[in-house]
Image (cartoon, rainbow, N blue to C red):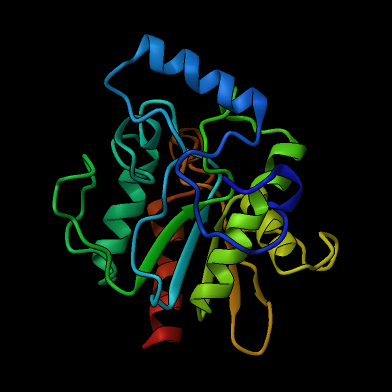
Length: 218
């Protein structure tokens, strides 16, 4: 596990035994006691490092990635995501039910701004900063052509990972930004149950973003 004060430096992509955030580590211990069959540990990214598309979410969901050990797998937030990925040729199947279901991502990798389940799905600013070194290392290793930010926390984490001021690029659904000469950042509302059920994010809105990404990547 990297020392707490070096996590902001891009060294490791992932540490399965990370306990750098005391609140999150303690919360996961409680979750493991209540749900001994759950993954209840830092959740690794899903997809190949040489993928041209990187999708960044917020954090593992209690009964989704935290349970299954794979991002956006087994919970409501993954329903629209994987369906849309499949429709645009980025996933081999439209459903992600469990980590061993043989679904494969195609030219796409999914990660989270925070690798551990936070209480009430709300990480603190310090926890986001502490985990940011992993995202920075991942982005540096990948050199993706397109990064899709699912929500403002993901958007801000991406800017931090690039060493950019949070005020430099404003989050807005469907906004597109140039991170550098190689990489475009596209923003989306998070595909959470709340956002999809309230129609803040509709399937058509999400489909438009992925159609744009597919056009950019070819």
